[in-house]
Length: 177
Image (tube, rainbow, N blue to C red; front, side, top):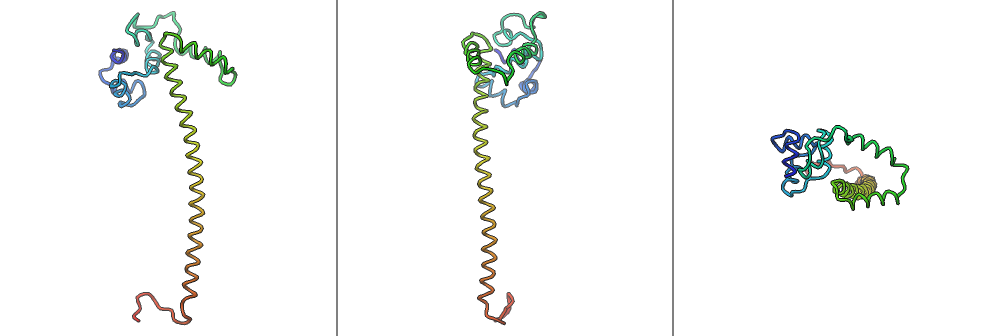
């Protein structure tokens, strides 16, 4: 099982240790174990930290350690970042590359799909957050207006009470009548 290989990879005896190594909560690891769905990013994370083969981590095949002559994950990430800076890309090129990765039969397909879903959710959450912030600002404006109106009404009420008192007959509260 892939979870067992992740534990073996970091010499961990518990899910808590794996959660710490991954930088996630214990609940996230328990959830992945229960649903038998391990996020692809976890494999990439551990493979990068411990110089392990993704094939071994994910599928249990091939050598455990990544070959010395193979590229390190950080190097390949740097190459990718340099070849496609965020501010200088064509959408059509990105879509073509994305389709090529998604159509491949590799762990990268799963990782990309997971990342796309995560980014999509993040974009949706950003939109929802912006709308909620707009609504909160509107409610704060309304609350301020209502507070000002309440102060005005309290002043008006005090003035009306003062006008209704007969002249020269101010009674103190609790005075016998």
